[in-house]
Length: 356
Image (cartoon, rainbow, N blue to C red; front, side, top):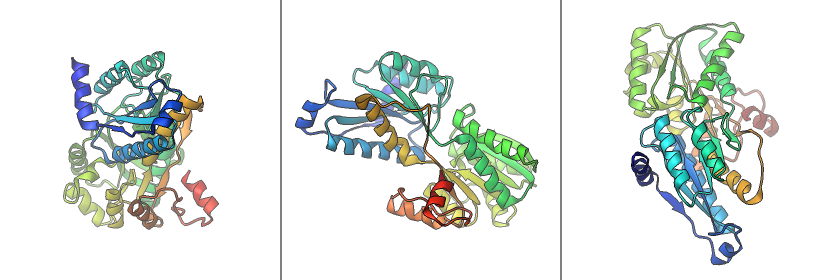
């Protein structure tokens, strides 16, 4: 009953997308029912980075359905609570459905995901991970950025803004999430390897809750009044808006606080434009959905195999290429590479390399 109720809640929140293919295409599809049904499972449904991925998944499903020969359905669901246990229950519920042909999931916990992923593959349902991996499972590939390198990039951005010494705090999401932990590991390794005089005075976890994240930022600021910098492993507290972190905001306005964060959503671009954020490390959110649907389609229908890690590349945003990223969001066009974030190279080839 627990799993069933959870799935009902997820279905109500997540909905499903069904795009009909023409009858002539369905007849030519090698699948018995003429439909490839992909379960696309984010960590949560109320995070804007996952919302963009959902739109990407639905967009590619519509395109593939129109082209034929198979109809492509995307079933979108997430655990009602952002916990590994609830996500595991959801995955087992999805495996029990009769019409799921493939699964793409962002794992809350890499170890907890092993059992349901392996159960799915044993049941003949291929699984790939995106955004957050479960490397010891039988998933066919992981699609995402190199989170460790992303953490190193964040450290470099913070050092460029803050300098090579000072007190820094780290805010993360759900403790134990492999992608977030890898970002922190890369961040810390960069500081250690470059022998920087930077002390990490606090590492706190928001559980992907914006309100809790903002409260934790203010608590750390009160406990460490001389704090110089923040590494926000995700954007959670920034979603609260102006006035939600008055101590942090005042220190940033005074030029005493420097912050680097993951993600490049419009709300963060606004914070950066006003001088509160000094560097962003962005993921390919659209591709989490768009590319996942394409890859699972190719695997199931064409037998395409992938390397264990499929690197999506990442976007580095500074004040030098901020306007280009704002324009990408305005036009909803993420196909063009960003200008170099440090103004070093201007050729298209060099710009593309810097963003990979």
